[in-house]
Length: 383
Image 1 (tube, one colour):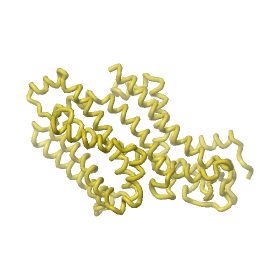
Image 2 (cartoon, helix red, strand yellow):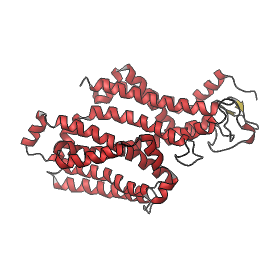
Image 3 (cartoon, one colour):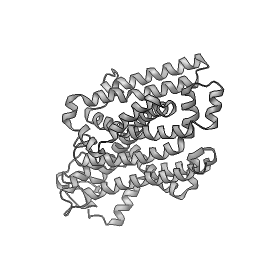
Image 4 (cartoon, one colour):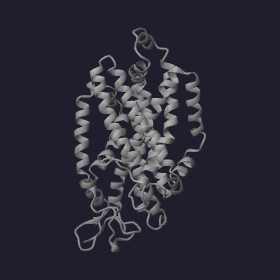
C-alpha cells in the first residue's frame, strides 16, 4: 500500500470519529429543541461563542467516551517497522495505516491521542468537582458566619495559595512524597468533604420531613463512605472503588491546589449575597443557616461558579499536561497528552508529529473550555 495524502488522512480520521459526530448531532439537536426549558444551559445556545465552545468540549468528551471505537491500534502496541514514521504510513502486513504517524517507540500517535482524551477527561473534571465541594463546604460558613471561623479558614487558604502552583504540584506528585504517606493523609481529609457536602445538603432540604431525611441521608452516607474507603484507603472489598497510587497522587494534588481558590470565590460571593432580601426573608421564616446557605444563597451564586468550574477544568488540564511533560503524572506508558508531548519533543526538529498532535489536542480542549466559560458568563450576566 502507498502512503496516504493529507486529504485522505483527514477523511479517514473523520470516518473513525463517526460515533462522535453522531453523538454531537443528537446532543446539539436536542439541546436546541428544548433550550427554552433548560435554564442557563439552554441559554448557552443563544451565544455563538458558547455554542462553539460547547461543540469543541463535547467533541473531546465523546471522543473519551467512544475512544475504544475510534482508535485504530492499541495505544501501547509497538510495531517495530513503524518507528517515527510519517503520517499516513501503511502498516506492513495489514490494510491499516498509522494515520498520524508513529512515535519513537513505534506506537500509533492517532490512537494515543484519542485514548489520551479519556485520561485527561477522567481526572480533570472529577478532581475539579471534589475541589468545588471542598471549597463550597468551607466557603459557605466562612462567608455567612464570619468571625474566627472565617479568619482561621482564610488563613489556611492563603497559606496554600502562597506557594507557586506549579512548584506545589511538582512537590506533591514526586515519588518521594508518596513514600511519606502525605497523599493518603490528604486523600483521607479531602475525599471526606463530598460525603459531608451531600449529607448536609439533603439533611437541610428534608429536615422538616424526618422519614425522607433519614432515608436520603442514610443512603448518601452509605454510598459515600463506601466510595471514600475505596478511593482514599483502597479498602473497598468489592474493588469497585479504587485508585492506583500514581493516580491518587495526581488527583489529591489537583484537589488540594484548587480548593483554596474555590473557597475564596465562594466566601466572597456569600459575603455579598447574605445581605440580600431573600436571605432576610428566609431567616424570618425560621430557616436554618445551612438551608439558607445551600438552598437560598448557593443557587443564586451558580453563574460565577459554573463559569469558574469550566475555566478551572482548563487550568487543571494544562497542569496535568505539564506534570506529564515532566514525567510526574500517571504511569510513564500512559497515553496522556503531557507524557506524549514529552516523548515526542526529543526528536521535534526531525519528527514533529508525535509532539505537535497531542499539543494541538490539549490546546483545542482548553480553548473550548475557555469559550464555553465565556458563553456561560455572557448568558449568566443577562439573568
